Image (cartoon, rainbow, N blue to C red; front, top):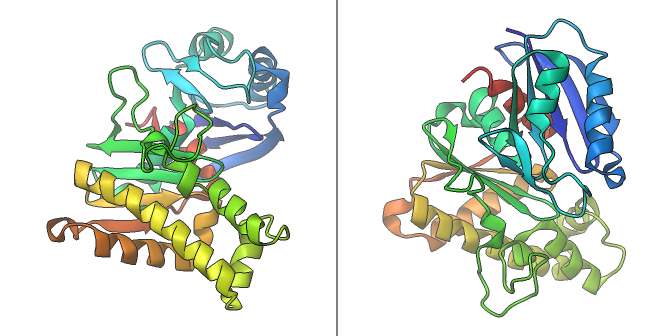
Length: 292
């Protein structure tokens, strides 16, 4: 079976045809131009898919909340205007006359890891991505647990600091307000405006910058505190962590060490693993929707 995987992100969209082994052919990337809105993006996706031939199905990974019943966009924030309500599955099936499946981007990335990556040896695991915010997915029996409304896994919005920092969601003290990459950047830039990305921060850390070392240690503590709560709730065999910042090899070790120190003894079997598929996880996960 040949499946066209499409990953619609806020900045870039990715396309590629993959087989059942996850070997990607004809991989291409294009700017999303998200501010032009949902109708523009959907027409752009149609135009770009038309450049591909010889595929049996389409799998879509997309930003926003997805209605699992009809493959429409249940909710998308202002980053993609007028995307909420787009009947993505119906539009693409009508146009291309092949089966189409649609999944949220973080859920798709978790499925990519489960089918082709680090999660392939687990039937159950939690998946988190640390970036602008914190995305989450719950994998049970190698399937996404969606919850009653189809939007389970909003780990970034569990409250870790009551009455704390105001989050973009409107609540105070959310996990992502303290443990996202954005939160790390804000703290680092309070020390020095030159710390504009993770690479610069960790370069300073490797050169024993004490102020940055303290900031990173505090940030790791915030990450670990959230993970401990999730591990105590779900009791998973593994937690798989993704996001560009997690490419820093020392981070997984530091997070794992801190989590193992904080959790109850009976939960210490849990493995903290780094995601392995990088920016192709969503595309591969979208394709796997037709393989499961």
